[in-house]
Length: 56
Image 1 (tube, rainbow, N blue to C red):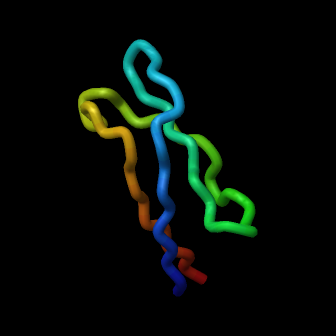
Image 2 (cartoon, helix red, strand yellow; image 1 turned 45 degrees about the vertical axis):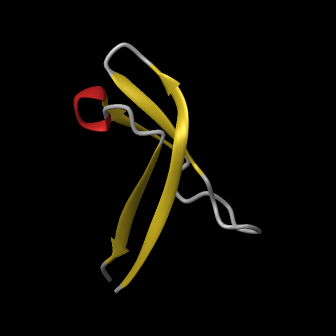
């Protein structure tokens, strides 16, 4: 199992959600790209982090 923490920054607000764009590590490709988070949870956050884990 390997876990990685991904960092995202505000990209765009829609009616009910906020789109965040992944900020990949230098020299690496994005893993998720863009994600949508519901406004009721995201609030006014400009940056978020997500940890994902591969289970083989």
